[in-house]
Length: 125
Image 1 (cartoon, rainbow, N blue to C red):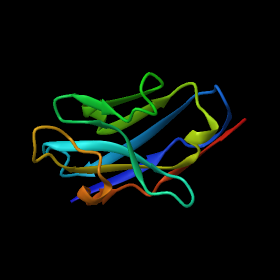
Image 2 (image 1 turned 90 degrees about the vertical axis):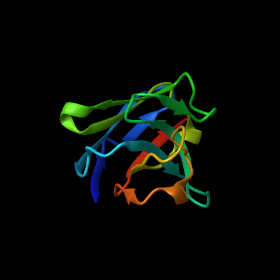
Image 3 (image 1 turned 90 degrees about the horizontal axis):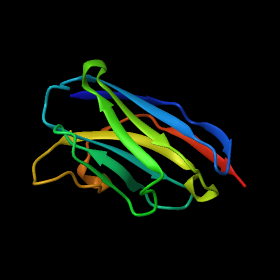
């Protein structure tokens, strides 16, 4: 079991920045994929960025060059630094975790069993 608590959301103007955090507890020594997802009203949950236990990262095309995923293993904390925010980034953001079983971490929501409670990000134009 892995417990996740995410935080750091808020309201910013377009072009602004926010940093999300996700504190993990439980079986954090597992070889985990840690991923940020987001879900806007009326839309499906989509993967934003993922990082595996070796530090390899992948990003959705829509956020490449603007968002950075990182982790501090000593603090069991996952981060998402979001820069140059756009109104279309408005969503509830969730951190998620799952054991890595393939060659890399996938960003498909149905593969993940452990979820944070979500934190709201609102970007105004």
